[in-house]
Image (cartoon, rainbow, N blue to C red):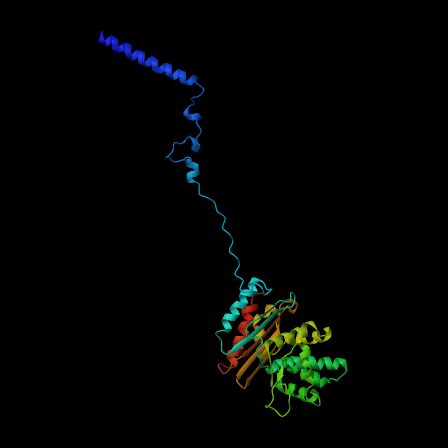
Length: 322
């Protein structure tokens, strides 16, 4: 009897549960777990509201785009491309460790951009670089009819440009300096040598080509006058000769390398205050770039050190560029 009652009670309980479940499914206010929204509003206070990550999203790595580093351009306002700017920087670092002081001016004749280092406005003995200015003056005066150059005079000019012959320069200077000896010096500023200074006390004949001072800026002005303002026939005479200088002048600007098609006029001498080694010229297609370098060694080195310095400056700035 007790067992029968127990069986009846169990059956009644089962029927009750089934009846409740059926009523719940018919009630529209009750939703199944699969239909429940998984928003923060359904999460009880005090529990995490973050949605569970899927296995795919958990394993996927975030993708990031790295910004390209900016090019290291040490002179961004110079007007030169980054390659040349870095070359200027290398040249500056090099000359800082070399004997004496070195003034440098580089010009892009196509864009007009100019770069100069901190010694570009310092006066240095010109040595034989002034022979290029003498050549310009003589050719212009002859063209204008102020003087008449003989075949011998023209031969002396060629010797000045080719091998920097001092005796040739002496002959031309004494012959064409004028009664007051100022014919050359009065004209030099017109050729870009605005601050050239003849030096007194070294010769009775004053001024004299061999004792003058100028700045790298002056030599920059001179070479750009030759390339940009000199009448084309005279320029056509000078430029090929600067490209065909003798072995004793194939340094300085020549360090740019044969691919740069360099042309230059060098000057060197042991002066009061020590050796000076100077070079001015052009490189590149159409003589696009000009370079002026003046190395005042100040007793810290001699011819060999100065020649090496000027040549390496040109190599650092231009070699491999063309």
